[in-house]
Length: 424
Image (cartoon, rainbow, N blue to C red):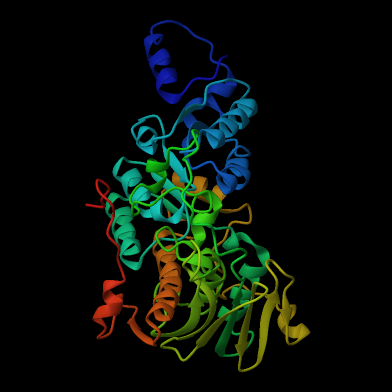
């Protein structure tokens, strides 16, 4: 039987209701078109295709109906991959994400765009009735606050898309710390990578025929095209991202916040020192040395190097070296400790963020990295950037989500969007 979407199936079934009919088991079972979660992909570049799309195509209860990207080269490769997987030519394509949101037969969207689009697209998606899985981070603190309010107001499912909470080593160390295996937590050491390249060529170039550059810029300020501005390189430009601290901090800072039991609040003080790229196109943080202080007395440092995390307590330490590096501890007793029944067991899904999101779309519950927690960890990143940019220590009220007696820092909590784009 040719596969049908839920609407065509229901219409056909209702139209034939007066006559006896034999329906194949696959139409009514778990693989029935009417039971699949239909997904639109917005952004199918490197990570969008090679990570997110790859994982979605493995999910038997999901069906990718449409792909969107401002680069037709990305779009054609994604369509080919989707159609090959399903054995047809049915995947629709567009360069305008609003066409994805307008389709009533799409249940959820996977957003894998540059950071300056994350909040705006997510807000527009939930207003259109879609559940959302969106790459991290937000662009500003205020955008994150708006995103949280919109998700909760519309009662949609939202997954901040990172794999960390499903990675055994990070889940394990957070549980060990939360359950007191290193005693009282005193200090966290976070090491993020250095920016991998720079300073970027600002020389204006002709816009490639395949690229809708105006749509790529979207709400960001108008700027001349150069190949070092778009696609992967957007991460090192302030107009589109928060640099290496936002790119990597949303990974390891989340494990830190999780273990510190501050995932829904944050630090009360940040003292950041560093330099920025000054010649060329890139202008985000280059070198950095950041210290945070939490209300519970815990301090957290952040420096560049081999991405790692280490928790120090009154009775030992636990951590790792390198991304997904093996778990290490100050004693075999800590390393081999068993989390017993009745102790704190942190919610995860070993199958990863995509599987977790689809499960939560069905149950209408929060995924393991919901919008509130994603916003809070993005805020930790933004606080570092703002302290470095202003060149001084900043005091932060995590309950009110505002700077204390600092109008200049408060002004940097938001950025204007280029017309006609708006969160209003």
